Image (cartoon, rainbow, N blue to C red; front, side):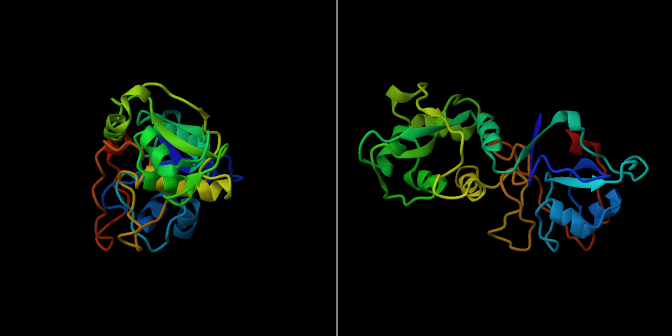
Amino acid sequence: MLLVPVPDKVVVALGKQRVFYRVVAGDTLKGVARALAVKPDDLAQWNALDPDGNLQARMVLLAWVAPDFDAGKHAVNLLDDRQLLVVTRGSPEHMDLAEARTGRVRTEYVAQSKEKLADIAKKFGMGSHDLARINRISYDTVLSRGQTIIVYQVADPNRSKRADEQWKKTPRARRGKLTGSHAARTASSNVPDDEAAETESEAEQGEPPGAPDAKSDPKRASQHPDKHEPDKHEPDRPRGSSEADSSSASGPVTNPAQLR
């Protein structure tokens, strides 16, 4: 199933039906909005996008359309809800499912004594800076006895390149031996869950395939982990093609390939 993160999976719009559209090369926010018979500003808000940003191929957009909306009549291909796994972006559920697809699991590590973050990172084949960003602490932090942080452990190194690389860096004695309890939260308990989840997602997952690169181009649409793109956490998945010049785009490209 396609993993689709949205701002809030339980939100409903009275008198509307929720649909999902997968962006293809040549699409623009205005073009997609026109095809779905919704306002561009609304479409941007529903997806936490910059109204003036560009869309990039393979992004998945959420829209609330009229209950009698006819996709065939509007010549637009929508994704099949039965093939989608919708989650709240940045939530523990999102992070767990995304990491599972890369062959990794999120667990909590409890310091047994004073321990340097760098030493803990080495135990799991991780980098100290990545572990620091995930937990919103300094890379040179020294944990006190009983202090808990989130670590990522490799469960299946064959699932992705990232898992394989981490597996090779993990001490042999620890390989295949998952320790600690399941991480039921995101990032550090010292910050709000939504903010922590965003940071954890940025630190470990990186930008999703086909997702806009907000750092290199602030004009691009900004969405966080998957951040708007399903399977965004699969490092081996090919990146989608870059967006086309919006001035020449005529609206959604209804290519059946977008459903694959």
